[in-house]
Image 1 (cartoon, rainbow, N blue to C red):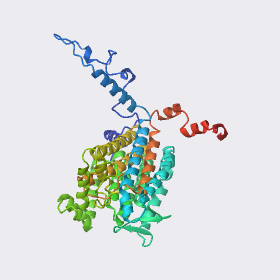
Image 2 (cartoon, helix red, strand yellow):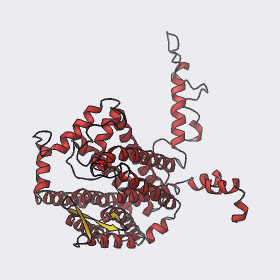
Image 3 (tube, rainbow, N blue to C red):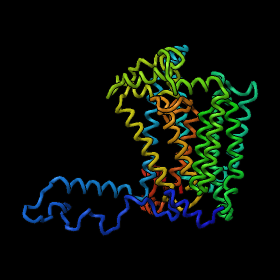
Image 4 (cartoon, rainbow, N blue to C red):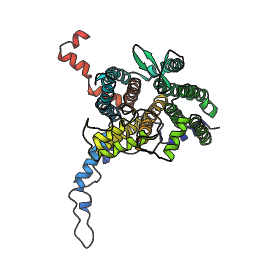
Length: 468
């Protein structure tokens, strides 16, 4: 049992400020914004007079300090989070289109299709997803909350349809898709966004009613709802997505300030459930045994794991060159989706993989910065859940490729081939950008920036007055 006051302190102890004042680091008062020293020349160490010796001179230190001050000032600007999410999304999406073309062309040719077949699908997803992200970025949180229950209902109905013979589409023994308009849709991807939005809306409503003083209100009906989604996803034999749904659930409980003993008990229960799901299927159990005790040849049971490491290792520092991968020619299974990071490592080398990893790290920084700075509880909860979902999914995918985590079959967000994953992720990032526009000072910064580019284009064409 906890009190509302203890509730708020619990949230603050977890690093999520309730007053929306921003990050505790990187913020400085106007008195020291010009530099680190008070002498005015930007080189305080050079002005120190030490007894018995000449003053030390470090001519480059002042410039370094000035640059650090400039970068910190940029990070403190109101719309920094917005542009970080936008820039990182654009870079990862562009990389994904290039790598899907590089990897999927081989599989398309082997299937007797055009080498641009899968690339066109991914490009279609980007062409649809980017406008959806733009709309979400300019929408109000009220709209997201209005879609919370309908989105949850759509995901549940979609997951149920995958279990109906003749409606659901099976691949490699797993029924995870339904066919709509000639395109395969994966309802489990919609379930991730639905749980994040519905869970955030549910807990925000309970907080407003003062019901979260009792920890049982934190779990009901959030925990049963999460359990239903996980059960439906696991019926389709998708352990990786089930794990991501549990991560979203834990992120929501962490931000809302669940008592430590309750949170620990849930972790133990979830661990036991994951172990049970692993041992209940022979192929999952063998995959875990292969992870704990890797053996066999490069074409045996552990072929995917071993060949993925071969691909990354053969890339060296700068890679073998874009499109020049040899492992994608049938050696690395699922090279367009689950193991596309291995082909990135082979073609772009260590430099390319580090850049991709840093982009996801930047996305984690931006998402958590948004969650700390926004004042609205729904936005804080949803921003944390979305950030945890996308970043942890990227970590799990990359960790499986390099061998530090077992293979779970989750795609690399924005990079792996997959229409449903791409669309849902872009909408989620658009929501994150919408929350960033609610940070302190963001409204004033947007107003000072003037009209957006659509209005500017209309004014250049002489259509702005006519539009009014």
